[in-house]
Image (cartoon, rainbow, N blue to C red):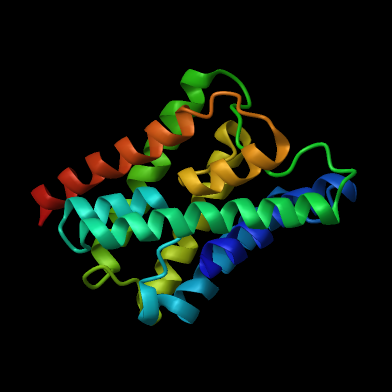
Length: 204
C-alpha cells in the first residue's frame, strides 16, 4: 500500500504539476519521475514485499505460482487502496487541476489498447527475467525495471498515458470521476502481461 501510494503520488503528481505550471517538468521529466519512483520503491521495499505496486504484475506472479492466491488478493486490495488514497491527497492539494493523472486514450481506444498491451508485455517480460521468485530486489532488478518503466512512459505517454497498471488507473479515475475507457486499462495490461508470461516460458 505504501509503495503504490508513493508511486502514484509522485508519478501522477509530476503530471499535475506539469499541467499547472506551464510544462515545467516536460514529458521527458514526467517519464523520468515514473521510472525513478519505481526504482526507489523497489530498492526500499523489494526485500520486504517484493515491491508489488501493480495488480497485473501480482496476477502474473500468481499465474507462475510465485505468490499464493490469498496473498495476491491482499496485495491487490492494498495496491488499489494506496492508489486511491494518493489520488485524493493530490486532489486536495491541487483542487484547480483539471486532470489528476487519469489514463484515457489520447487518440482512438484501439490505438491505446495496442500500446498498453505492448508496454505491459515488455514490462512483465523484463520483470520475469530479473526478479527472483516473487521479489523485485537487488541492484540489477531495481535499475532495469525502473529504466523499463521510464522507456514505456516516454514512448506510450502521448498515446495511452502509459498506465500498464490497473491500480494506477483506478486511483485517479475515482478521484477525478473520469471513467472513460477504464476497462481498457484493466484488460490490456493484464492480457499483455499474461501473454508475456507465455513468451517467457517458451524462451526459458
